Length: 405
Image (tube, rainbow, N blue to C red; front, side, top):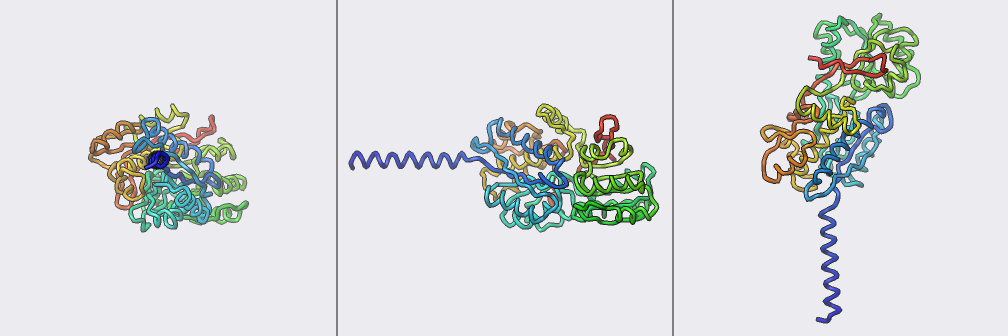
């Protein structure tokens, strides 16, 4: 063999080794799908920050698998457009080739993204903020999970809260999508079952400039309390503003989609004095306390709506990929159930290095997160905690009043 031929073969071998090494050390992509624009845009930055904080904890403590870094490409669902949501998911799944997805936030967007794109592609999805009961019923091949409770629960808690305050007659208007209808149905059924009266229950379409006719129709019921189950950057803001201008309602109620300081800034805290709202929150657990410190250290308000749930969704997916032993999509959902459930050594938020060592040693782990234990049921749902929110007039912000039991 000539010297030139030997040299050529050596170069080829070295190059092949470098290519193989590069492939082994490629970034692991976990996508983030949310409404960066549209009626939930004011909530999305904190939720995304929660997800990125989990990624930072993984990457700062040795990375995932063989030292790779997690990167988190994101895509915009617009929240209000299911076609846009499916297109955004397609970008993450087919172009970015993500292993799994955190998201989406709006329930209709999550249903479209999962049903049309992620599930057919075998991609595990964990939503931190989609609460519609319809998600429970998806034919998802055990690929759809969420770290926030269904509105079957939030609606029943909201009903109980209102009745405990002596409010026994309400009108409801809800944004006409999976989120709004699911929460409205749950609230109405629970409220009436407990002895309350729902004088009117009407859907409305997102994105209109004038809801005055709808408000007049609701006000014809003669009640003073209006539950607006919509979004703070969208129809919810417009309806409350116009209802105040007309003087038709004096008491307002909202779900998690309305818990944004954008609403208060736009209308004024004095005008929203006494507003009652609910959102999924965190229990008083060690995991929640640990996350609270980690979040404040990262300049993230741990009480921001769905921020803790987003951290948990991201950290759980990282644990599942590590448990699965590869950056392949197959096997992630089964691994997710294992790392989220007892028995196993407890892993708290931020404890990536500990979790990685235990998994390497073949030990079972049980993640106890920022927003509680995520023991997924057969449908991928979790139980949770619902927090009462109110308007702190002096600071012009929403404030937690405590867990509703």
